[in-house]
Structure formats: C-alpha cells, structure tokens
Image (cartoon, rainbow, N blue to C red):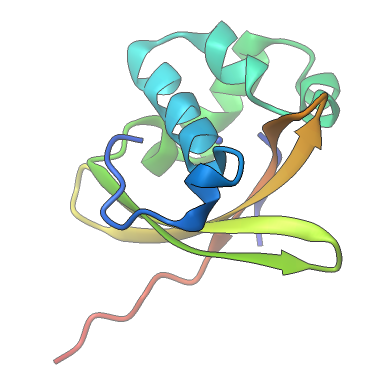
Length: 131
C-alpha cells in the first residue's frame, strides 16, 4: 500500500470537521494549490514531518504528480467519514479522476501550532461498481 505523507474542488456532503477545525478546507486548499500550479502553497499545507522528508516544494509536487495523479488533477471529490484511530485523525475522501475512475484516499491529519496539516495519505481499495 502506498502512503503519501502530504493533501478540492467541491464537497458533496459537509461534515462536522469543517466546523471543528477545517480538515476538509485544508485538504481542499492543497488540491486547489496543485490545480493552480502553486507548489509552495501545496507544500506549506503538509506537516513538518513531510516537509523534512521531501525537502522542498518541487520534490514534493513531483512525488504527487507521479504517485497520486488523482490528487494532482481531480475531476471531483467527496468527503466521506472522519475517524480517530489510535489517537490519529483520518479523513476519507472519494476522488473521481479525469478519466472517470474512482479512488478512495485516507488523509492523516495532525495539528501543528493550532492548524490542521496533512501528515499522510493512503490509497485504499476503490469502491466496487456493480448493479
């Protein structure tokens, strides 16, 4: 399983997370920064751990482009459930890429100086589409 330690266009279903500290807004802001080609803004939303791991905005965005193209240029997305697991906050996101394929990602969120930052992303099994 790939893990991306790092972050939308429209949320189809609002969650309590928006009122409780803006987790959805942070993820949305990072994706908007990717779409705008603003590597610095996208990198700034990553946790300090991720920033140290990649060393700069260019390396970070190259990793996202290659490993997470659905995040780099999503067609649309939907925020799903938010959970606490072993003291960590996880936000599940459903993303439709530009080819129409669905992807489920789990974002690990951490508080840094009172603000939410993205500390990791896991690509989960895509939802099945059957009748």
